[in-house]
Image (cartoon, rainbow, N blue to C red):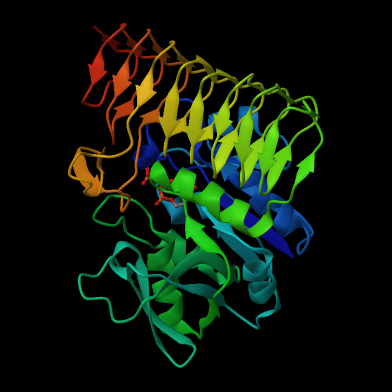
Length: 394
Ligand code: TTP
């Protein structure tokens, strides 16, 4: 059997993270969302084909990446970038975090199948309407959802779906939607709904990068100190330190925490629970990091606090740069997504800092702020609004 991973989306909602990396290359401890999906799929299928954009083709070599056919957008357009003449194949969205059980169930299912997952906020998803285990319809983002079972973005399909896609009309957002094709398929033949109650989440909004890493840490992290950890370091709870990482004296690491290869921590740093420190990042003296994903080559050299944040690759925070993560009124932090303020569902929420950003000394960044990639923030500034990519914030 073959599997197709749809990974050519623009990931606009994930900006500024996706200003400098394709969405499927979101880090997940030492790996990425896409790597994890491909590794799981390889245990069940003979071939994994990824549909990606040009940038993904240039940056990801682990398996075949086919470019999405130019012109049309949408999940159905992505799938129809290739033709498979198979009785059945798997289709998986490339922005999902799930465990192996999600795939093993669908692989073994007879006939056309869609994975259903239970969520607490179904009106944000494609809600599944079924009779028994037979799919009636996927209803996109309904105000009054008929159930809390939603489309899990994992399907087993047969090649008849391609002729349905050929006849599809664009949706109101001008995309060719795979869910529209599945609805046509369900009106012609039986599409089974299989419920998965294990790990599943989609990573579509910036703070979900923190939550995806947290989920994987809770489920899979184990203690292993492969790198050089000085004897005067206090390690509490589950902590994974990769080879060639170094943790210097006086540092306290409270797990769960993951320290990537070549990272340099301390002396006298405080790493708090649910922190991921990417490859070759540096966290220096008197720096506290909590529930934060630092990507590759990030530098927090001295006197920084970063909590509940995502800091993208090669960011350099000046001494004394602080990211606040709690409002005075302690209400949920909102963040602007494609121009609309959206609740993050988090009372503790810091900032999303895009790749290659530099801040001067004593910069303060307020909760829910997004700093665009390659922005420069002048010393002593208080950043209380989103900053554009490349902006010089004086
Ligand atoms: P979406 O999350 O609907 O779209 P997106 O990834 O472009 O993100 P955003 O809305 O923030 O811009 O996509 C679901 C999956 O389908 C995701 O894994 C990417 C993939 N996809 C494609 O491969 N090609 C496409 O043209 C689109 C729209 C999505």
